[in-house]
Length: 201
Image 1 (cartoon, rainbow, N blue to C red):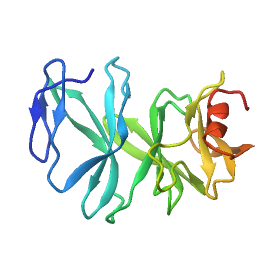
Image 2 (image 1 turned 180 degrees about the vertical axis):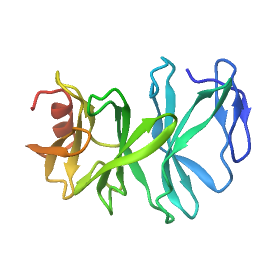
Image 3 (image 1 turned 135 degrees about the vertical axis):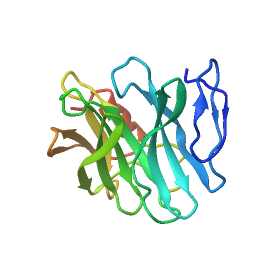
Image 4 (image 1 turned 90 degrees about the vertical axis):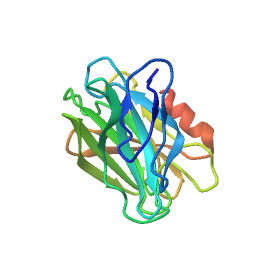
């Protein structure tokens, strides 16, 4: 479990302790998403925490938090989308292309832009390496994010809907390009479950 004392201020730097962590953001910011996500991004066997952080006038950004030098703090962020009420929906945290470095993927504005963005995490920095339009993983009114990551015995693959929510797509990334496969018709939430469980290839 990530752990620290109560944290205040815009930098949210927290002394590293035990048991529980509470981060209080600046009053103009909130955490979104369904829950924080944990993944070891730098290979030190200690998980970083990945959150969606939104600003009142700038929309959302992805933020990586972690233990550095005995304190829990922001490690890296993507830029804010740049406009109020604009959101992103996480997809995956994994070594998507097998090069030993971790990537973070999310759908930028899943109701509007419908663009998958892949960022590489290296030396506590995030660099955007690829983008793919015409996909989504969330619909207005739903309290969950659809799709996600699967591993059917090869490289990790992302599972998404097409922009019109008619198809379930499997998306692989080789470090440069995307391989997009239409594997099933979308007929409800169960359509994603079958693909994620590798029952549909």
